[in-house]
Image (cartoon, rainbow, N blue to C red; front, side):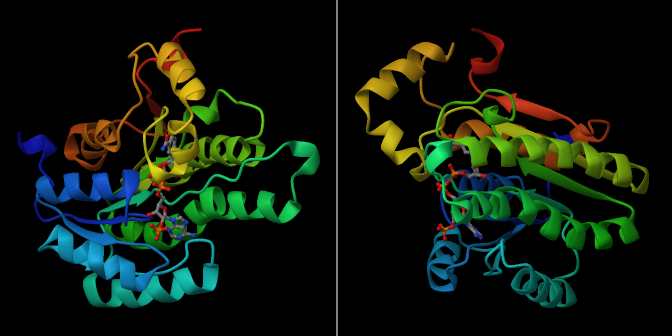
Length: 250
Ligand SMILES: NC(=O)c1ccc[n+]([C@@H]2O[C@H](COP(=O)([O-])OP(=O)(O)OC[C@H]3O[C@@H](n4cnc5c(N)ncnc54)[C@H](OP(=O)(O)O)[C@@H]3O)[C@@H](O)[C@H]2O)c1
């Protein structure tokens, strides 16, 4: 279907060495795009790029390091032009009770999960606005909406990312950009390794999720292709839950 075709598009996916970011990168390649992979680890990133084959570029930087991100993106865009699609996917989780939480952990989670989307997003958006088109997808979470004990900085950052998504839409939609969020439920990735390994949690989450299972990174790829493609040109400022029904049912 041509409306879902990404041929000729250039897509930057942050945090794409593994997990959801890598799955989205692979789906974009399959839909015909060229993809720029990102991770702070340049050596490991090259290994991933060689596994993914042709049409793959790399741009290694820590998304929470504003100066490094701006420098890396400037030289990337000088060489390859501005991307058509940006996925702000890089994220971390640091769990702990609020009364014991070091402020450094709070700042680290907010920097990586939220501030990075502003920093990378505005740099990319400048080129998209000049061109009059672009798609930005912010990877949010069911924790935009539902929270659990011990995940306060993550829930605050992801809720903020929902607000940032709507704010980007408010300022940039008139310039031809579509900015939306995807909010995964509980997916089996390294981010959740301790929860996946916990039979009690797995029993609870599979009963709590109407679909009756952990999600996989591949569950996000269809919606991610849709939001990167012309098929979603009038979808803007939305956070779309991809959670097996978790947020629909108590
Ligand atoms: N898994 C879930 O259930 C779930 C649910 C809702 C939302 N999400 C969100 O989905 C996104 C991806 O999560 P995931 O489950 O795929 O996690 P993951 O398997 O832990 O992968 C995270 C990726 O982000 C990269 N990353 C971490 N910090 C970075 C930084 N400072 N700069 C650049 N890249 C960085 C990692 O790079 P390296 O590989 O080099 O370490 C890795 O490639 C996150 O935003 C997460 O919050 C996940």
